[in-house]
Length: 475
Image 1 (cartoon, rainbow, N blue to C red):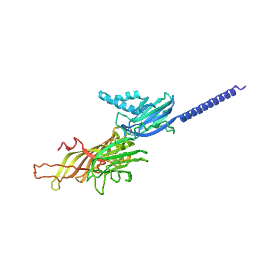
Image 2: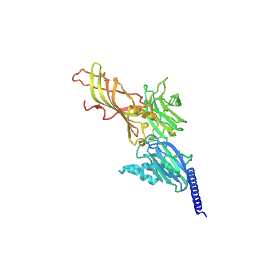
Image 3: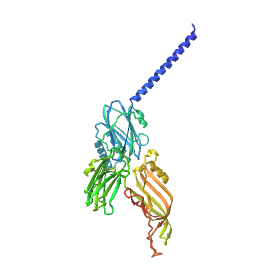
């Protein structure tokens, strides 16, 4: 018998058996992975939140032994999200009230209120997280202890005033959610709890006066979402004012009016935006351009998704309805007076010019640059605004400027919160018709720099930058 031939035969059989076994194991592994992927559930949710606001989701059909994975990240503004998981019967409104009361007690007792946040969360929630993800992102995993309903809430971290849009990834038995990159599977894990959420809810109160000279004003709404409803009511508080309300879109087309005929001392309107958008304007006028003119004081109450506004009893919220006007603080420091021309009634000066304002639309996520502020030259700032879809900032002109203005430096610094500073050093010739040289050489002169806003007061109002304006050290 040929032993060599038998040995080779046995060896080949063994190799084939091993190869076949490996193939079976590989197919089983692929099949198992495929089944696991099919069983995994991932849902992506988006929304908006900020101070005093928050979105609550119901998770109605979780089963014991499942693992819930949560990942939340801010996608606009400077939002620092925080997420909380609780039992399905938890009262989120009561929890919010209890948290506010506990923080106030801590402050009264001289404690650091930031210490209260983790203590309170550990006592009142099954799981929670603030910054365990990338940068300011929040994430956690939690094994469901019993069949039933649960609630998940997302809001801005109470440790800072942050706001913006968010992206929320939820997964059941899907650990890839914690990478923040999991693909939605089409599953529905959570649904919004409309009653307990405080999202896109804003109430604002404004008072003012109409005279024979000032007959109207307008207010630009913050961006609205699909299905948002605007409620507005205005009442006369003195005089014979007959106010009218008109809501117009970005093209100036009227969408809804209140007290159109001007027959009453109050006006109201309600409008639901089927398609969201921006640059909607609420115009308030004193009746009437033709016929007797009315005047007096008014109180305007407006709200988004707040029908109680129409009763006139709604309480203003931290979140506003309108974008402006934005207060701009102005400072001018005259560093040098280069010449005084009595005949031409002007003077030359070197001036340090500074503006400070806060515009939430300019806010950014510190994670994007690993920074709390960004500095721009003017051209760079224009691009930054264009990338955010913005077209205006508090540009101003020197009303008494003659000829050109030579700018040595123009820098804009934007904080992550939207706090912005504009700094410019310039040389210019300025008109001075108020010069009086009759007491020369013992005369005293006032050197005025008159600033005028490019935009109306409905967009920006100017105030003094306290402690900045005056003469430089060399004068």
